[in-house]
Amino acid sequence: MAAVDLELDGLEILSPAECWALLGEAKVGRVGVSLGALPAIFPVNYATAEDAVVFCTGPGIKLRAATANAVVAFEVDGFDEDAGTGWSVLVVGTCSETDDTTFLSDEARGRLRPWAGGGRDHVVRLSSEFVSGRRIVASAGRE
Amino acid sequence: MAAVDLELDGLEILSPAECWALLGEAKVGRVGVSLGALPAIFPVNYATAEDAVVFCTGPGIKLRAATANAVVAFEVDGFDEDAGTGWSVLVVGTCSETDDTTFLSDEARGRLRPWAGGGRDHVVRLSSEFVSGRRIVASAGRE
Image (cartoon, rainbow over all chains, first blue to last red; front, side):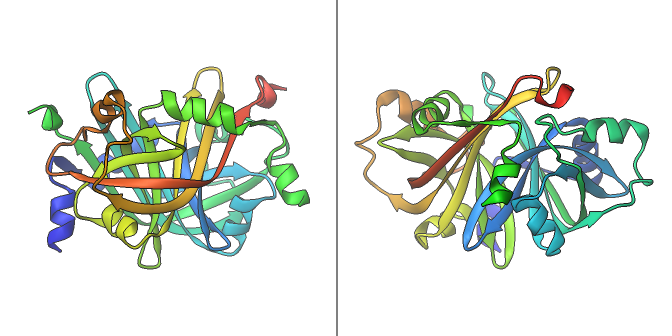
């Protein structure tokens, strides 16, 4: 696994607890799915609950991935472009559509309202099977 | 294609020219690749040149995708979390590693310096085969 070690050079690995704390603070994440043989990435506003990422969508690519119980990637990040620092968290897991939203807090329900409006009333639950996070070590690229 | 129409409800479709203008302004994008059968998304700082997205990486997942000439997704976005508005641009294309960086401007070279440092000296060129962009129609979700 030397390649992975090298890829992480200059990056601090975040603990799962740190990852979930960051997931709880951000409002927009990106869902990575396959559309046929082609990859695609779409931003969504989302909420977290019970080690899952939850978002709403309309009848389209993201919902098809969800109803197929596809494995998808979900990423959130934050960067300071001037300082050249930042962090990212990646969640990989299985999606499913759910009608039961009783596991969501009122605050989470508020976060789920789709910014784009327009009939995005399907609730998709991404069950986290893998979470990882990285933070750029301050000044790592400034030597 | 009714599903696609619905998915775009509440979203303005951006022209390729608008997409490239936004790609030229942002500094951080996200690369979507497959790691074995699992999807993953990694942020990178990048530059654009000649209808291509260029980024640097170390010997790892992103470089393996590049050297395999894999089709990858690349996404940039910008959001106003308080207003609930934003935009995103998706580029899909084939990656390849390149030793020739003469097609890059000095400004682009400056953007390519990896923030995380650490031996990320492989230049990957993502040749755009498909670009699309969407912008949330102001107040679309606020009815």
